[in-house]
Length: 180
Image (cartoon, rainbow, N blue to C red; front, side, top):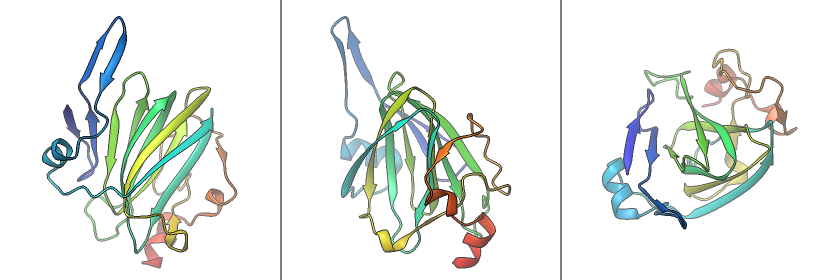
């Protein structure tokens, strides 16, 4: 597998080794020892999630404030634009984001460590998105930053996404930072 660093510390793209021929393909989507060596940290994943969304759906930008979750994300059907943004006001990269296209065709993954907001927008007709989490989902701890925050200025590929009522009520980056 190949690990590609991004502009945000700890946020990396993982390009797994794919073995393919005329019959199809095989790849390891996760192997603890190999991933821990590649990422230089212990990985105690405790929960796997799967979401299905239609074209234009934008989910995020989510975070758990006091019970943070790291995530290893991938797309098993379709294509998404995946984003991680630094919301820690004490960080040198505060307010910066990275975006990458994840697709079933490319079989690439993104590792998003604790402390970053995360979200994605579906680019294909539909997408199945899977992610492993370090830390359990804690609904009482959920928060995030509004997807179209002008201070983040994320260049989403689809300008008028479908966003849930809950996600459309997330705070601005400045308000989130004040909540800390």
